[in-house]
Length: 242
Image: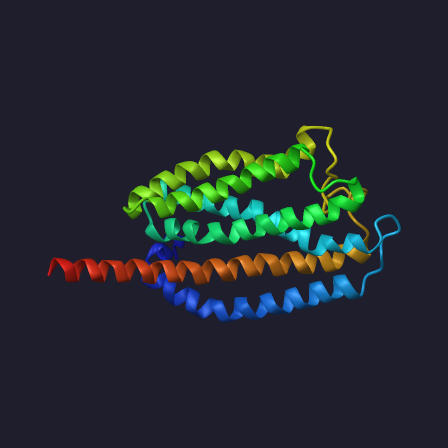
């Protein structure tokens, strides 16, 4: 069985219709369990107090903001190489979801950073690259809206996605590239010395799973909507020709 069969819109619609209820259910369970566990059943940090609990929103949203762009990159490459319309529509569908995660990460980061750093914003390498990534999200969405021909829009937004991927990587690895700046290292790491304490780490993993599932759910729903919209436009075009 080839993965490319899901590039067929009919096959994608049938498979996503089956998967969506499961995705919605698992999303609700993980988010409720993770957030309630994190905000109400974990202690305050000895340094940061209750402010540390922003981690359950900030870290998952920041991770998904970057990973959403990576998913868009993969879908865009598939469009450029294989010309599968579902992949282009999936990338288009993911952009507003990724932008929302990015804005959540910026806002929660400011709320977390102000009491820790004494400022709402700093031109830290990771923060700056993350802000640029946000602008790329806005540009990507605007470019899709500005071009009427869908194939041309898919081509140009795919190129923009390739360029923006540089800043997605910088947002992820800026702390490793530059040994300066206010932003701390990764909250989750293979190095046990860099990980947060287990009392925060375990509910954080559940929250991350919830955000991943939320992203998957929203992309499936929005891609289905894009496919229906494309079908409707094709039918209207045929009627005008007839």
